[in-house]
Length: 157
Image (cartoon, rainbow, N blue to C red; front, side, top):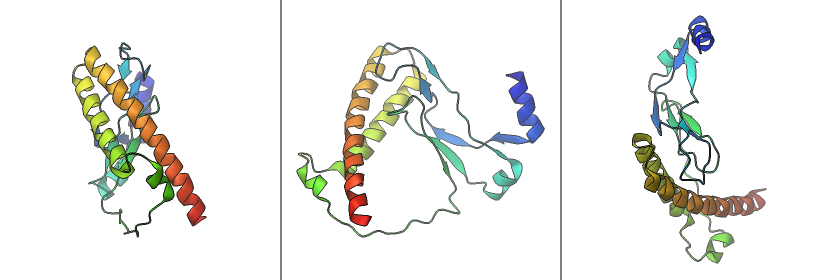
């Protein structure tokens, strides 16, 4: 650890401001009895970048499908969102729920909320079990989204 700190000081980098979940790695996603939660990932930059993009921040997403959570670097000055036209894809009409767009966002929010609570109380087995159930639903919705995106790629390709 001391060698890492010396390296960071030598190359003059530091952490970019971050939000989101604190614990970004777990040993077992689907085992609510697993008590191993760690914060091991970082996003770092040099001082020039931090000065130029002082509003930049990193959002650590709930760890969802993988054992690590995703880190998204947001640079507000650079981001420009384009409006896209709406197209109905047949895959959506075959689903019972039909509300796939909102389902994934809602599940991400729930997962984020539960993982935030787990950050505060990592030994709470009820919260871990709730997180497992939400994660299972999220995985199913993510598979549905993947199928949708595959169909869209055929239309656009």
